[in-house]
Amino acid sequence: MAIAPSNPARAYAQTCDPGSILRTDNAGAGCATTTWAPISGSYYTSSVHWSRHMLAVDPLDADHLAVTEFSDVAISKDGGAHESIWALSAITDRPSAVLYDPTGALWVGTQSHGVYRTTDDGSSSTNIRASLGTSMGPVFALAWSPAGGAIGTIYAGADCSAVPLAEASNGCSEGAVTPSPR
Image 1: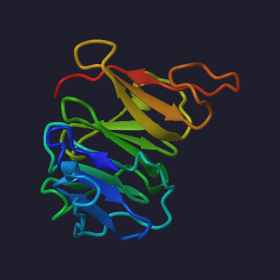
Image 2 (image 1 turned 90 degrees about the horizontal axis):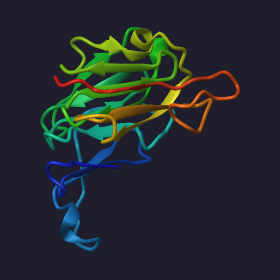
Image 3 (image 1 turned 180 degrees about the vertical axis):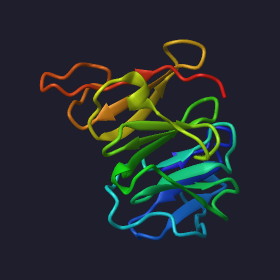
């Protein structure tokens, strides 16, 4: 589930149905009166590793969301009515987590190639692992913290350690980068 920071009444939720993401525009109405409706599109493939990090909403725009799929990221700019597909560099990238930072940049954690960052919905992107020059295991979680400067810090949680940004005793390492404005 993801709640739009710019509009707390807007929320999106993935369901166990492989083709269904639901949206509400009255999330603050209370349990008995909150209404959910499916959004169109083919968001989600049943063979994707299930995670609460698979859905993200841009904090600047409640209609701008990203959903991980088997080998790409579906992005909508109109609240889910339409989607565009950002195909990562190779099918082996397998996106597993998405996060929008406070500037609206999209970060994508993958199972084999670290983290990507885009400010234009995937038309161009930077592979953060390559730019950090580090090894990073499969990334299954991304988080943002206001610490670390005006925009904050993005943390990537890889599956070889429960503690982001720490050198794990088994030789795996995680990375953090400070976001830059778009």
